[in-house]
Amino acid sequence: MGRYLEVACFIDKKAPDGNQVHIKKYLQEDYNMNTTSNSNEILTTTDYDMFRKISNRKITENPKLEEELLSEGQRQPILVNGNMEVIDGQHRLYYLRKHRKPVRFIVDPTANFKTVISMNTSAVNWALQDYVYSFSLEGDPEFIKLANFLEENELLSDRMIIIAGSGRRDGTATPIIKKLKQGDYVFSNEKQLRAFCKFYERVLNETKLPNKPFLQSVLWTLYTTSVFDENRMLTQLKKSDLTSEAIEGFSKKKLLLTFLETYNGRWSDDHPSLIQYFINRKGALTIPSLPKQDEDN
Image (cartoon, rainbow, N blue to C red; front, top):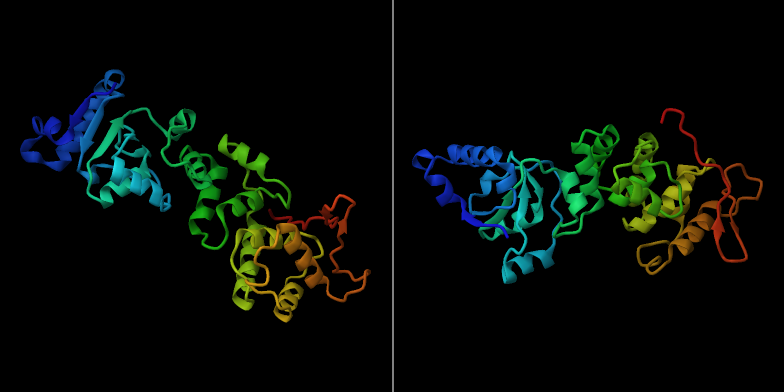
């Protein structure tokens, strides 16, 4: 079991006049000297500035965690490396600092994000963005590109970007997500995804449709067909009575079918931009059109 230490008392004996810079320096020196015996030592501090963010990951509000910390206290220490960078527990630190509560933490000089993934001890289940940032910090160029895209994006869901960025057009995302969590991902479709963002922004600005993940997914499926015409889709949507209320409760299949019928309108079956689709006897909807090619991707 870890030994509890109050950081201020532990450090003040060495640091001249409580100098904060020296406090941090001595703390790091003490733990770098003996990583084995001190790696499970639990310390406590109210010096929130001694902790450093390892990335610009966004803090996702978690009221349940906040309430738990206030009512039951901090059960699990945060984990920092030898540079006092928070490896696991950024959300806990955020709420403890917000409410001016003492922070319990463990220093492990060798810890990195892979440590957390292997331990699976995070108090807040990792979002997809957390995995992306963790592998980007390991220097993986594909994850670095993806992390930058996620950071600048305020339109599409992280899941949508990850799936579309991999070049996947439709279908289950489970294999992609599973591989991503293992550090295996290729951001192969950035150019087309950026073009889609511009189109999707026009849809939101020029229609009464809501920005919802299932709408993003349906439009992406249509957008990536070889015959898709952006202006046609926008014109038809503006002429239709499709609104946020009208599509409330629609399944993805029903919304996709509705958008296909809206897009095709009264075009004849031999129109060059018509999107052909079929519904088999089991009710599955299939769009046989070849995916749109992007030579520069």
